[in-house]
Amino acid sequence: MAGSKPGSGNSAPARLPSLWVPLRYFVTAQVAFVTAMLWAPWQVSNLLDFYYQGHDLALTHLLTLGWITMTIMGASFQLVPVALETTLWSERLACWQYWIMLLGVAIMVSHFWIGHHEGLAFGAGLVLVAVILFLVNMGRTLWQLPHWDIVGRHMAAALVYLASTVIMGNLMALDKIFDFLGGQVLSTIHAHAHLAGIGWVTMMIFGASYKLIPMFSLSELRDERLAYWEFWLLQVGLAGLYVTLLLHSSWATLFALLIATAVGLFLWTMRDVMRVRRRPRLDWGLRHAMSAMTTLAIVTILGLWLSTGWVPSEELAARLAFGYGVLALLGWISAMIIGLMYKIIPFLVWHHRYSDLIGLRSVPPAAQILGESTPRMEFWLLYAGIAMTVAGVVLASWLLLQVGTLALALAGLTFAVAVCRIYCHLVPRLTPLPEAQIVGT
Image (spheres, one colour):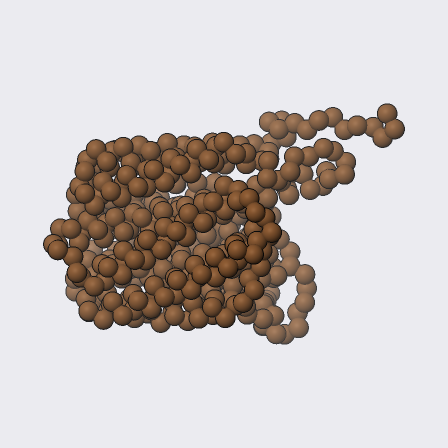
């Protein structure tokens, strides 16, 4: 499938990919998330120790690659055609990428766990190959755009940061074998983490939110000017923060302030979107999203504080940095992804199973597929678990950390129940419809 240049006049209607293209990514990512949540209570002793060790890094990369990146990749294949009114360049390439990515993540996580550097580098290389295939597919897809709006700009920038993050990760993996990078290990890790968390993940979430939050809340993005300011401030802030973290420079605070300003503009824009929404009641998908944005504000303030270096002791600074990472991964990114998945997956499943039956049979509404009680329980378990886990990390409390990770494990299981209830609608035998009524009887 060949693409065409933006503005070339190609106005062919967008064609949505098969359901199974994004679904294999979603299911794999959800298995990774549940596995990580169930794994965490058994790692309390390691979590109380210094965060730069093999078992903690294995758990971290299971979340960042297996859960977060897999989800975003799957969502991109489905949402880019919808949000940007174009067509996915190659479904076959997306399938090949999936298997390479799955193998690479499995090898990386297992070799982080056992501390085998050669195997880790091999797994990182497979992830790099998968990311290259993803970038080719998304690049050719975006190349077909007739115009670039704020959503497309965020997605294109996020792809650049994804490439940079994975290349840096591969260099760090090879450095464990050949020791050629030099410099301070922690500075390199902090730069790598922020490049991934802000440049790849947060950039993509911001871009998707400008399209999806107005769509899901029956609202609109009335003024894009703040969104464009947010976009450019985030670019400058992240580039500067990356360099200053590598160099361990005090200028990091200035660039952290630029990023905080960008985050503030994004949150203000989302507030404006929600204020004029025509759907007054928030469902559990949107409640997750709004709570995640609140957590993002807290994460941003904590990050600003850490960038100043005004922390009484190095031990407290290390624990605050660990808590900052946990809060960002779970309270901001994971909660936001769960919220969006509660909106996206029911619609995809409903459309696949029931769209052809409208007017012929009695079909359940898409909102009913998820239900109310299970996502409600998951929401409160998740945020209780996050609060106690972060407090346990910062205060070095074994009890808080143990109870918090157990709550997260229960949240993971509840999330699994919620999405399995949705997937059951793909199997007609498990979710039979009432018998069709004969007209005139």
